[in-house]
Structure formats: structure tokens, C-alpha cells
Image (cartoon, rainbow over all chains, first blue to last red; front, side, top):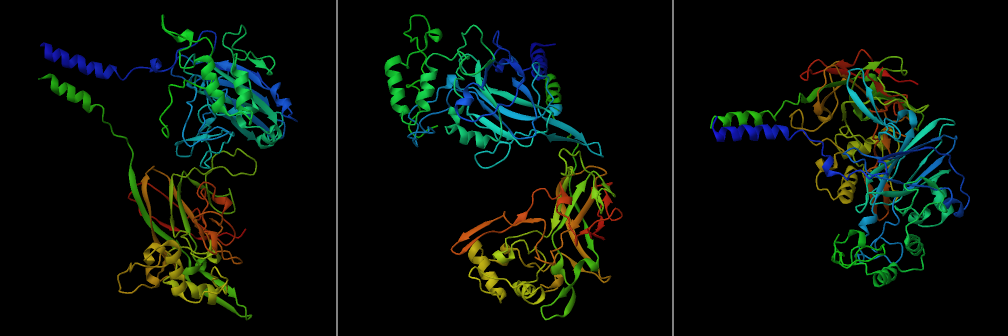
Length: 323
Length: 294
């Protein structure tokens, strides 16, 4: 066999072999000590009467990547109580930039979002009996398969956590780390429900996605009205310090969760309608030199800062009007 | 170069037969004369019995895994599991079509009362509502509409249309090519046996051997003259000057949950009138031969 023929055969075999790969290398690697699939056990819906009741009812934790192409996330169960139950999860300290900020919104972006704080969890829920995953082992879904009289298989989606999208469509998810919530109406008393928080996007810096989740009695719209704050501010403290000795949790209550230094001040400013975040971010840049890399990420001999910036890199701003 | 055929063979191995048969399924829908006949109590106290294609509502046809008697008071498609008490299981239809649909009717007083393919012209429509069912069309100013030209002009104005074909409320095609547009050019045409016949096509359907054709005719309400398959809050929204209304449209799950919309007075295909396909070339004649009475 001549060399050209051999090359062609090898090329052909290579083409065939290329069909067989897992794609794991395209995804974030596993983080030691931070599992990619977490089960929080059975939680109980909490009665929320005032905004101050929320902080100590929130369950916090961290979840990492699975280390493979398989999706990961967090699950927990609860027992139906015959009434409505609100599921609320906040995966990121604050999803914001001045284009979408609560205060002084601008048509054009002035400050970039902090992509290193940009994890995203997508929520779904339904009767536990329909959940196809193995809690703590493997993430599933609420899709079951029905075989009709002709033997044809029909997928049936039994997720009861219905979210309405920006254009009014059902089955939506909030984007880019925005809090997600939904109400399960008229839950069946004593029947087990499963809640799935799918790890849609781990943060770029350390892949450790901190979150806060609230399971409350009643309708989410009532909860929002009771809290009387911006959705991003209903759960606070989800910027968890990964260096905390008991990380990745879980923890129950804001007073017990180790919050990243500086995060509480940032979140307080964001949630204070009287604070202009542009001013706050400019001050943060002046104080912390946010354009420099964080020391733990910087190469040897490069100037770096020691304090984390929450407004993003001010030198990484898009041009006015761009996205 | 002898390796080239090998490479081409390897490449050719990437093509494969999907095993799908996509076909336009055609056939005929048959309505008995009784389904197109109704007795009207006139305002002057008299009765009038009419057999008129304007009484034919939209006909919905679907392809299902099967049908069964006993599920409802009429033959009904097989259903999947029920997940909530009181909510019927989904029929999971394979495909479907309609004979006559619900075009924008141009007047709020006509919302959910007009099916396409039933009126020879606009005067024919005005006559129906004014003289037969005695519920005249009313315009945006509350005035009675008494000419077909006014209906046409209103449609043209609201929709920015310039032809009757775009309006789709009346017959516009000389289907039998006899030189005139008349009753014989509507969707349903009466045969010599008194029955009404209409051709249907279920376009671009993935054929599954053994699926069953079933359907029903949504008869207009005897009280409101509206179709129960029509959602008056949806459809094209007209908001111009004194006009502010939705044009109505079919509910999205008519074939998935037909029992939610079938009501007394509708005509349904009985188990003897369905057709189970053995070939995409089948050309069935499907009979809507059962009157729903409860």
C-alpha cells in the first residue's frame, strides 16, 4: 500500500473515529469539594409575614460543575400543603448593569456586568413521582413518555413551575443570573414535590455557583408585595465566600452564611433606591483599582489588586449602544 | 487513487433514509342534510325551517392513534393519561386541518359567528344575519349594516385590503368553472342525495400507518349564533377610532381536548364513520353522522 493510499485510509478512519467523543473538555472541570449534583433533602414551606422574615428562611449553598457534559444542579423536595407554594431562587449577587438597573436606567451601557459573578440557575418543579433524576446523583427532568395505541412515543412535560417570558410565552426562564420564581398552586396535601435548580451556567472565575433559595407558603406575587423590594433584593447574601471552612454549605439563614467580603455593601447599595450605582462603581474603581487583575489571577510581576470588585472591569466596557 | 472510492463510500455512509413519509392526505367530508337544517322561531311568531350551508360551522379533522365509544356520549379519540382531576387526557393528535376557519369578521358584532367558505357574497352574509337569524350586523357606531358593500368597504378599510380574496369571508373562486360564483363554489356543496360534500387536504403530514381520521362540525349556537371553538378574546386586535375589539380565533387545543369544545348541536364522526389509514394514498369519505345532544 502506497503512502498516499495509507494516508487516505487513515484519514477515513480518523473521520469515523471523530464521531465518538464525549465533549467533556468543552465544559468546566469538576471542583474538588463542591459537588455538581446536590440534594438538599426535604424542606418545609415557610410562612412569610414581613420582609424581615425572609432572610432567616433562605437556604444557601454552592454547587459546582459536574466535570462532564452532563448537566448538574440542586434539588430538594417538600410536601404539598393543600395551598400555594412559592419557589424562589437567586443565583447571583446582582444581575445588573446600568442599562437595566433599577435606578437611573440608561439606554446605553455605562458599566459592564461582572461576568465573574454570573452564574445562572433555572428552576422547574413538579410531583416527585414524575422526576426522572436520582437526587444527589444525577439531574433529571419532569418529562415522561407516553406510548399511544400505535406504539408511538409522546414526550409529556409535567413541570408545574410555569414562568412567563418577556413576550408573554409560557415555559420561559429568567436570563443571566436573574432571580427565578414560580408558584405551585393548590399543592396536594402530603404529596411529595421535587424542585430542580438546573445549573445552566457556572461562574467563569471559579465555577462555584452560590445561590439562595426560598420555599414559602402562598403565592409569589403576594410574597413580592410583602417584601416590597426589587426582585434581585428579595434574597440577599448569595455571594458566598468560597474560602469559608464550611463551604459549600448548605446554610439556613443570612446570619449563618459566609458572605464574600464587600458583597453585602455592594448588595445594600444596589438595593438602596437612593444610591446611584454609577457613582458607587466609580468610587469602587477609584478605591480598588478595578482594572487590575485580581492577585490570585495575575501573572508574576504584574500589578494586581487584593480586593474583589463587584461592578466589573471598567476597562472592559462595550461601546455606547453595543451589546 | 484507489483509496478515493473508499473515501467516497465512507462519506456516502453519512447519508441515510429517515424513514419518514410526508404526504398530503386528501379526502371528502360528508354532512347529512339534517346537520345543515335548522328551524328558526321568527320574531313575528312564525317558524321557518331552512337547509342552508350558512349553518355549517368550522369542521375540524384530526388524525389520532384511535377512537373509542364510551369515553363520551359520542365517539371520541383515544386519550393519554389524566394528570389533574376533571381535566381530560390529551388525545395527542398526529395532525389535522379544518374545512372553513374563522377569518377576521370586520365587525365586533360578527366575532366568532362567521366561518369562511359559507357565504357566496357580502349581500348573502347581510341577508343571513338580517333576515334569517334576525340579529343584524351592527357597525362601530351602533348602526345596522344593510348592504354587502358596506361590509366589504369596512373590511378593506380596517385591514387595508383591496380584494375580496384577502378578506376571505366570501366565495371568490369559481371552483366548478361554470362561469358564476354561487352555492356550488362554497366549501360544502349539496349532492343529489341531499348530503353536503367538501374536499379536505391535510397538508404535509408525517404518515403513520394505522392512524384514524376523526372530526366534528362546530354548529353555531342557537342562542348567540357563536361558535364554541372560537375564543372571542383572541385573534387580530382592531383598535381604530371607535373600533376596539379582538377578531376571535380558534382555541389552540381543539384537537388535543375536543371534548372541552364539543357541545349539543354539533355533529361528530361516529365510530362507523371514521377512517383508519392503510396508505397515504387513501382518499377516505368521512361522515359527520352523529348529532351530539348532551
